[in-house]
Image (cartoon, rainbow over all chains, first blue to last red; front, top):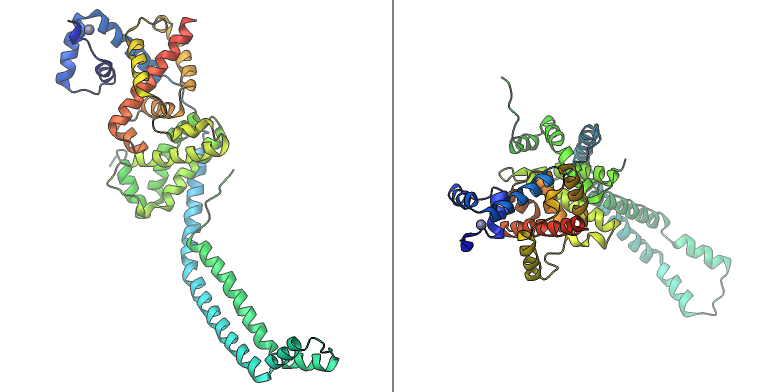
Length: 177
Length: 196
Ligand SMILES: [Zn+2]
């Protein structure tokens, strides 16, 4: 009869009720006649009962309510985020256009005012002395408003680009309480 | 009409359509089980709370992409388990690295020793119920985290084998093997403690 003893796998499936009715009936038949396997099954069942009796940690009473509130808050943020996205994209393209425009203006002004010539003088003649007059002439020749507007548009575009990235790919949520 | 409790999948579909109360129902239903599992794996009430909350936030943020024709519960727990892994890795990188590893030991040896344990007369089975439960509780802590996880899913969360397989993204047979080995190791530990 030893050949018919339940294997460990059979045992496991029997205790876990993971087998079909036919297989189960066959095992029941053997178990009725075999004290060894009967004891093994009893052991398995006892262990299973102990496992089912493992303690459960009790979640704080208000946890579900707090999570629901956090979820709804997050959803609200999400909606606002989506509503903001097109506006930021438009503003970003606009400031990029402006930056390019003023950049071109600036380059043209540089060429028109002969600033490049000044620079060439400065760099080629190291013994060249800085007189207040030449310095003033240089400053007057600089297209300051074009430079300023270009930089302003560029910085604005950068800030908006940062915002857009944040909006498209929000940082990992941090809801620590 | 008196409403029967809606299935997870129904609630999920309604949540996708923008019904906040359906999502709240899912939160109500699964906060305790997820907290329970997270607490079991992380042993810290704060971490367990964070993981539970983060799980639902992840779900709600990817709501459109979640399939409502697949079982929701294993999917939900899969997210929770991954978050537990992340949290554990941050806190105790060595101890819990085992949650990831697939088959660290020589399996043949394990099976052989356990086959003996299965047949040998045991001292723990004569213990009083309360005493046995306490010993099992302690013995669980000595198991590799991977085994603690399947035990928790099976016996604490009452998952079916199929649900465990889906939650852990493992083949059904691997789940069966994990559970069998987990219990075999548990018997060995109980035997050691019970004999002394
Ligand atoms: Zn037998």
